[in-house]
Image (cartoon, rainbow, N blue to C red; front, side):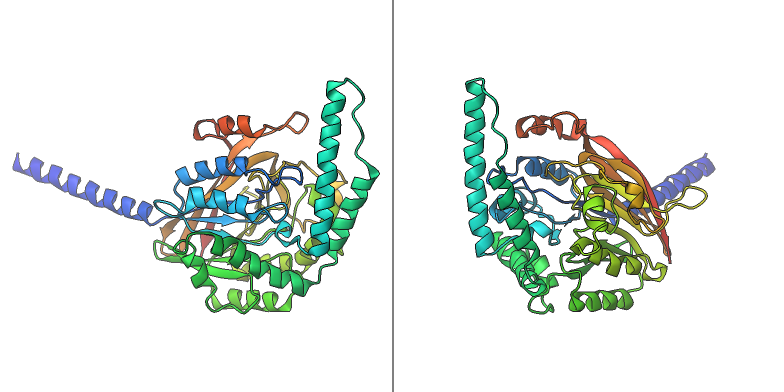
Amino acid sequence: MNIHKKTSLSIIIIFCIHLSLFQQLHAEALHFIAYGDTRGNIDTMEKPQIKHDTIAKVIRGRTPDIILFSGDMVYYNEFEKFTEVVRNNYTKDKPIPFYPVIGNHELIFGNKIDALMKELLSKIKNHEENTKSAHSSHTETPPVSLEMEKIRDEIFNEIYSIPEEKLKERSRQVLEREFMDKLAPEYPGYLKETFKSATRHQSWYSFIKETDGHKIKFIALNSSLPDDTEQYQWFLRELKEFNGPKIVCTHYPPYTIGFHGCSDILDKTSPLARFRNRYAKVFNEPSNNIIMVISGHDHNYQRICKTDTKGNVQLPVYIISGGGGAHLSGRGECDITQIPLDDFKCAIFETAYQFFDVTVLAENEKSLIFNCAVLGIKCDLTKELPDDASFKTLFVKEKLQVIDRFSIAWQK
């Protein structure tokens, strides 16, 4: 009887030790969520970011350790709408550190652009009123005027003519004045600490997180500065100084078969194409240990990667998670076989509002597993996208779809 009792006690002790080790490992796992492109359109930018706020509530409920944001906070200058969502969802109770990168829409600025935007908004409002009047009187809807199209073209010409040095200065201003300074002083301390050793106009940065003794470096790049030597040389040093696994976050995707694959990658003079041509070869160098590159810009979800003969995902994996509330977009309308993908393939493409959820676990002292899931709601572009009111009832925990799920193995 005593022998049986001792045996039972030993089994219980062993079970408790294993359970304790499992719980300790689970407790030390790193959990992060990435998403981007929360902006409205020009005709909705002055309204609250309802879709973003709805998505943020779900993200907060999943209690990630950190959040990565891949850019395009706003359409044009309405930063208070963005920081309101961050403030309401990520800064209270148990704050969640939020790491943003600069998108191209953060860099629409200047006196001439201000004047053109005001003129265009005025004409859009007039057009909306004329359209309502036509509907009520059952007359033909007025077409969008050539004058409005001309103003849009002028705005884009002005945007593309802003010197890179001015974009560089503006980028840092956005991170400091429009993001950090607009939140409670105690909240963005983690980000201010990151910038302590930064140069005056630096808007790129890195930080390290740990999971069960393994260090992972996160690198945030400003893809709107494709020709900037300071950022590029800094990036090369960051890679050289840290031999472990790395995750890169940037706005422009080096690879995409969406709208911007056709409009930007195929245009060798575009900022996206220049960024891709300079950085992609560095991302793809195996010795740099880059696990994944997370981007936005195209308003959909894409996983672009290579697989081995057994179907295992190879490094690095390119993720586009641009479904944070902006108007969704589909595949590019050009011949996408002409888009240079450097032997990578788009494994998954979904037009969806979504976020990218990753849990990093240590298998042993030499290897990590990145368990990745994409959660959201798929949409059909041939039908009307959900308005803000219906979105609040659709994008809830109980109704989310698993859009993608995969794992990445990394070994020293």
